[in-house]
Length: 117
Image 1 (cartoon, rainbow, N blue to C red):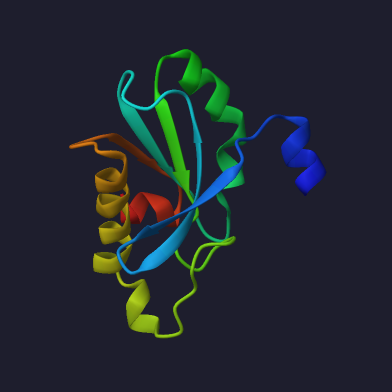
Image 2 (spheres, helix red, strand yellow; image 1 turned 120 degrees about the vertical axis):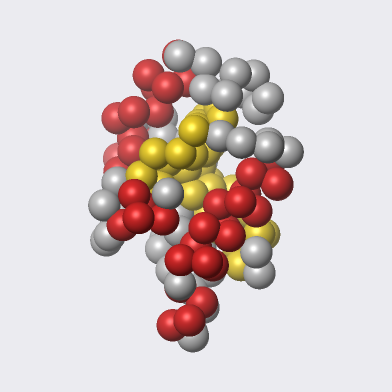
């Protein structure tokens, strides 16, 4: 999959510590230029599922932020099931905005990601 990711210029990940976990986050576009947009993947997907939308969103002036939710990809995988409730998952997104210094953002979710959004 790494070759496929590199072949279409999908952003490289960064591990960001938020809300007691580390999230693997892919981002494109410029920070604090235009409005941020956070794309939340579904089950059992990965941030890579948004690969076809990234270029168009960057071209439209968005700072695109695509986290792998806890338990996916290289994001932390807590052992306690209670660490995956909606309060923790939405808290991760709020903490991600805090990390980037944003007060608000556009959120888009697919499948389980839509429930979190």
